[in-house]
Length: 268
Ligand SMILES: Cc1cc2nc3c(=O)[nH]c(=O)nc-3n(C[C@H](O)[C@H](O)[C@H](O)COP(=O)(O)OP(=O)(O)OC[C@H]3O[C@@H](n4cnc5c(N)ncnc54)[C@H](O)[C@@H]3O)c2cc1C
Image (cartoon, rainbow, N blue to C red; front, side):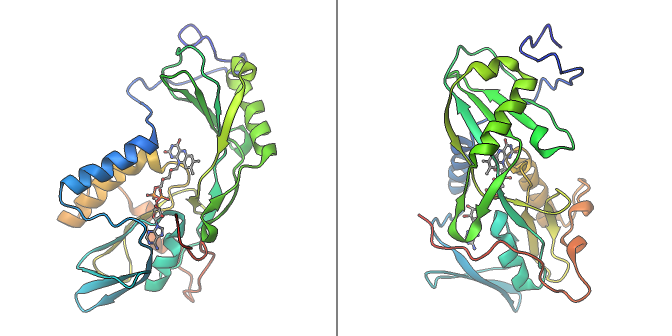
């Protein structure tokens, strides 16, 4: 492994390599998927906050903040860290918490690292990853997450988290310590207490499905989640074992709401 990836630090004692894995830029990939959906006839309504969801007869009635009403026989709630606000309207509250993953990007250096490289331990601060893009910049992620405020649509990078991330990344690849960080950022992500998403049908309302709370891995597994949900909705079943992700695992005897993400405010 060290012959193939000489940038690995001496603390790295073992590694696994998955040559078919890849990485992509979400700012390019996600809109590309939206454009493909539009070409397939999907209506995409941007800057429309859904404030009310209910089942009325055989259909769902979904109301936007501009008063627009949408009706459909199937409803899929995929509202990320804000999804608890909608699932609670069907009496399926979830203990979802919003956090902001810590991200940094270095100055560009000659492109030489093809795989995404990461380490996962039981210590949050130690679990870091990096990937180099063709332009040469190295994108660093993982380690301690910062606070996020879903109601204000804001996530915050704490300087101490960036410093701890850089300390940990140098254990994995010491040479990265010599590069300048040119930018840091974060975003709002939903986390559930067991680190697993909510995925599958509602346990109270027929025709209602959930897919949210990806706990930091949603870009990676999103396409597979979409395919699995489509199969489940279309055929009523799927070969993929998703029972561990059922929303009912958070049900309380009283149905009391646990924590949820806060009110979604107007977005730019
Ligand atoms: C900084 C950062 C780095 C990450 N790095 C990685 C990584 O390296 N690999 C990886 O696999 N994952 C990564 N993730 C996680 C990944 O981005 C998420 O898991 C993924 O985006 C979740 O997708 P989603 O569609 O469920 O939720 P989101 O992407 O949060 O999308 C939910 C959407 O629903 C909208 N919405 C919410 N409420 C409403 C409402 N009431 N009405 C209308 N719209 C609503 C929101 O505006 C948002 O657009 C990272 C996340 C962050 C923030």
